[in-house]
Image 1 (cartoon, rainbow, N blue to C red):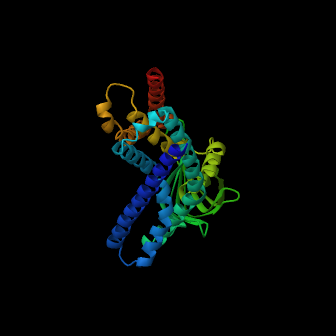
Image 2: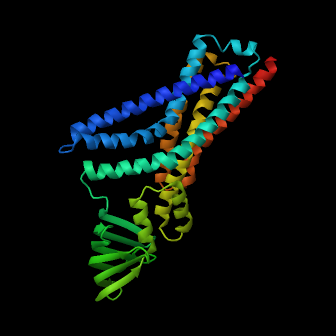
Image 3: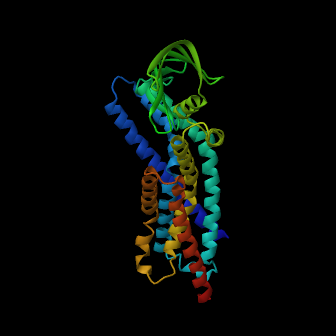
Length: 354
């Protein structure tokens, strides 16, 4: 038990050091990049943006740090010939894998709670501060935006001021089942009513293409819940709880494409935490590989991070070409099946050797 605790102590020491180094390195690069590229901005504003990003960066780089920490731990124990001592002390490979599985599950829970409760809100705050102070943009204004309100209704506006709850240059386009223009509503000035989910059009022009007639209506009120749902999705950095509520309650409100994109991002955000378990376990399984390719195991343990990165890129490309968002899970399933296969063979080999 003492030796197993020693393994965990070394692993978490490497994990903390590597992750801290990555956070400092990438945020230092980000600082100097902003310092050089952005003009007429105080250094303190840049520093505040970087400081707000430190904790989110810590959680962002945890999966990569987990993989690197596992490799360094394996290397250290190999150099000191400690892997040869474990069988003598009756510490089996399965015990080590079980230990790392329990440790990474704990790390995953810690990362999930810390990221969702603390780091994610800080990241949103840092992004808003960057937009206001560095890019000189008003976070309360959305400019030149198209929204798909449902599968046959689209809208565009020039400016929407969320603070004043009013906008300009609104166009709402209605299409029929054949995607031909059915009706167009345009308005120079409009207001929004968030509580009732209404748009109040001061003076709207309605063009009906069936008879090509134009009608002018004063103070027209249009109920558009999808509009407000997408404004919220666009302007807010929502928690997983809020995103899940949006997915459930807005399934029949927002168009299929927007819902699928939101669901895809939700899955990726959940599956991100699974990397904390997959990287160390797969790296260890590849090191303890039970087949006659031991001479290549030092190359194999370098594969998990690039392999998952490549698989995720391929799955994203497939989803962008119209396939189901459930393809997001496929890279993780491939790695999980690989771990289970190797784990079983490692146990079988250990049983035969005894």
